[in-house]
Image (tube, rainbow, N blue to C red):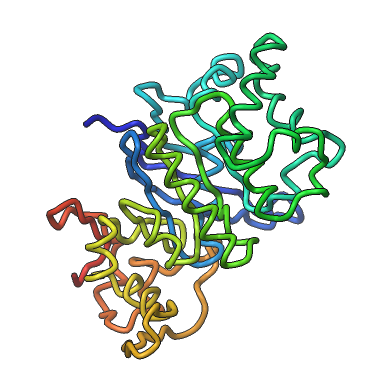
Length: 319
């Protein structure tokens, strides 16, 4: 099956300082050469510590942030080179569900108008808009009369359902989910995740699911990519990655995650220090300053993301 989304060597670099009293410029590599693909109807989980570049990657795929280098191919078309008009048309195919289900909704608009807005922007007539909004409210589990409510009249879970309805409005092929349940209570998280799963089965939508909660990622994802300091260090199918992590950073992340079985004993992999700044990364392997198995040779070169077989890829000199 051909990929719906193909990201190749995607980079986002920022220039810091410079120009004042001859102070040299510094480069901050927020995302530094990320490559992955997503098939139609598939969910790829993207995980890692705060500041690793997950959300920046997601926003570049949506062209909310312009990439420094690399390509973003959606359904056979490289959107990284599209002009404003062509990109506007392409936005029908890719939408986003934001992290905060309140600040992402216009508080002055009624719920029905929030969902109808993208439909009106693309020229759908009034009767079609009305029918489509009613159908979307029903699909995400909101009552038809809720269209007249304002966002503050909904609970957090209901607001996120409203955000999902808006994301579905134009019939996208790919939805970027940027920490979509992190602001919700645990019981509500499960309801929203089950809704997303049901919608995927019904509509064949693909998801890029950005999150830090590994339990949520394990539940919803088909494959998982692990990011560290702007790079993917391991990518594999869900069962393989969670049962047999190979990269030391993946092992540390999984060992720190709460277990669903209270009596299960985990061997904790402890990392030394904090993640380095992307403005001054270490030489060679970006993880080597915290890696429990690092050797002097790890400082020589950045490890390539190489194939290990079975769809697993890993960026480590020693694995």
